[in-house]
Image (cartoon, rainbow, N blue to C red):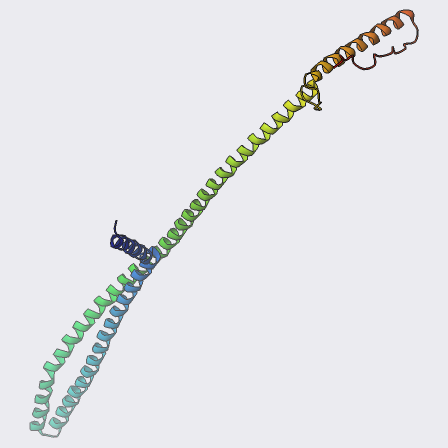
Length: 252
């Protein structure tokens, strides 16, 4: 693999790691929740705009109704004064306002219908957002719990590996201890048997001296045993016989 190929591979690895970090579930869920909140805020602003327009039309309708009532009153007053022409003129002007009143009523009814529909939509969206928020928080808790479990298991895996190495070192140490103990026991037995001991200048003479010492020791034991038997038979006091002084050795 060439230098540029390795650099491209390293760049892709780092880019993927950065994307995976950016796609952390908690951050993704928070972002989705934020976008939903922004949408419902826009919906609420639209509802507020519609309600404002409806209120303005209702005010204009109220003013127009006041004008109509005023013209009706003026027509009645003119008729009482015998001015039928003025009464007719007032009623004609009143009739001009009637289509406008109908238009106001129709527009207000449409805005009220839109407002009610958006209010119902806002309630549904708010409910969904609240459910999403609850699920989001639960998912984040579950993710962090799973993340903690993964870290714990990874840590336990490392500890298990270390414990395996420790057990292996302990087993090797115990094997060495057993080997040293076995060697010490063997040396002790060899010392007791006289196979090894103080090094003397005479090589082959050491074995001969040991054999003579063994014979002398056996003779001393036999002499003591015989003396004890004789003493017991005579009923007298036991006197330890004189031991053979030192082993017999051959001249060099």
